[in-house]
Amino acid sequence: MSKLKHLRPSDAGEPIVDRPGPEKLLEGNPEFRSWPCRDGGKVHTGIWAATPGLHKVERDETGLEQFYILEGEVELTEEGSQPKRFGAGDLVVIEPNFRGTWRTISTVKKVYFFVEF
Image (cartoon, rainbow, N blue to C red; front, side, top):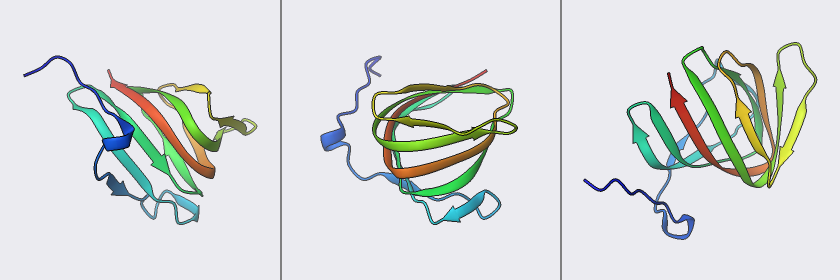
């Protein structure tokens, strides 16, 4: 098995399509699409996209996500804090135990890296 992985967005193939569960959905009807590059063990990476909407985000102490926004705009609001907007060119880290909301303002596409501890 090769130790070199790659994903070219122009020929990534069909995405995995998902939506937030009803317990997390707060507004709209967002659709999530993902193209994993590495999805196994404790490290997950690839490309992820979402259409506009608002949903809850709840992370526990076992994972950290870093992502780079390729296009679109989002607003993340941590419980007890003011909303923060991020767009194309921004690098964002969601630390363990994050609780809050994710609002996709305009269709977003990001490169993600998620590691489980």
